Image 1 (cartoon, rainbow, N blue to C red):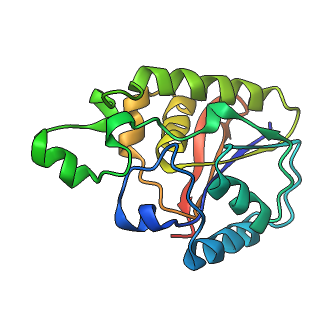
Image 2 (cartoon, one colour; image 1 turned 135 degrees about the horizontal axis):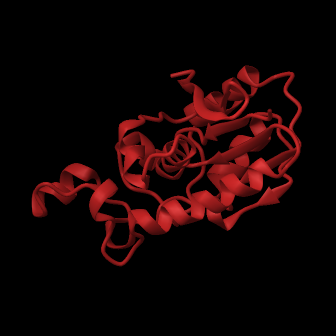
Length: 188
């Protein structure tokens, strides 16, 4: 059975600061470029039937530095739309809204967990139909939702799966049919 390799983009200035970054299109930092090259080393030798990437430059540059030829730029792989929380840290959000959780509350003016889950379900369905291994190059929160959905959890289950910048994870199968996380957050 085919595997799906998730590659989180390398570090940006905002990811280093813990700021929510969805539609703000930031470049990789020098460290982020190093992380992207290291991700490429971890997947060296793999052949991919498809490489899907978010339309954001941080994901596309990560794919390039990892040595991947993107076959599809997929809007469904864009990061969670944080709406009014774009550029804001979780600590700052919770200062005005104690107990807030992205995973259950979503974002005002942005997306709900259910909406992000539906997008990632579509991506995973396309990946399963690719006829071989697939790489998904995207962002922390959306890839965490992908991991959760792969193993049958609701989108909020992504909150249980930490995913650092520049890391790789592999979704696959046990016994040929049972979806599992084969590896997670490798390279941190």
